[in-house]
Length: 326
Image 1 (cartoon, rainbow, N blue to C red):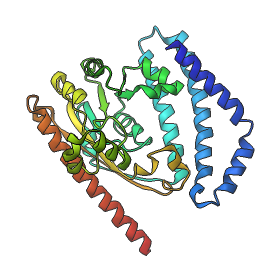
Image 2: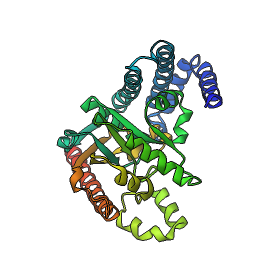
Image 3: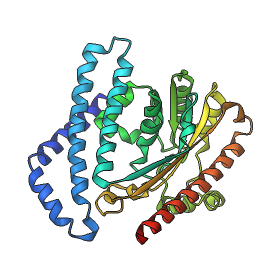
Image 4: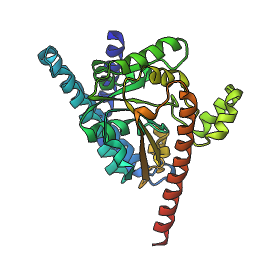
């Protein structure tokens, strides 16, 4: 961990020393290059990048400050959660303003109620913040995350994420039992004031990844055909959660409109500019979640997730057509 942080913070330092002094030239060049259609939101991407650099350094200073002075205090976890929320909320708000996003939330009643296990669709680098901001933030409570290990390359996520009760899992499959235990232990440690987030697909869903999965695992072709908007859920971690779940409801989150940020390059080609995004939550009470036939239950909810994505896509399409007529 120490070596990783030395490497990532050194990398951030070098990157900052190179890019910050060149900011005026880089931003001017980005505005000129934005005349090229495939680079039309390059200025927005560069402004977001510079905001990220400032946010990262500010977060590191704040995280460094509270460690020697507050780590023995009862509110140490809360202080780290505050920094996490501040870091993510700032980046999200700036992205919404720069790209002029229009975000609508459906099923807000599902956000209310007891703490829950949130199972969300995953299509982009942007949708990872939704459960924390829209579920945990709205409820003013912590959300434990199941995250991929690779995200520890970002210093603030690494430091704050490991101080807080989260699980950074290895998705390679070399230690599936260990990863499942991490996920189970994370839920077991949850109290009545915390919710938990997991992405059942395990990675961002895309046409390319669906095709790769169909080639690599032909036995999943039927599931890929059945859930043509999604990747099949990875059953190991989710089934383990069902077995150790104390009393938590399940809250599902479907969304459409974030596909324009499937990769970093999408932020510069204009596909996310003035994008309309629809999100829908729905809740399944704990007493209606079977433990002994959980797989069929989950598949049924994944059918619902697939149908909901279709409905949201249709609503966005209709809204886009209506706007074009004005």
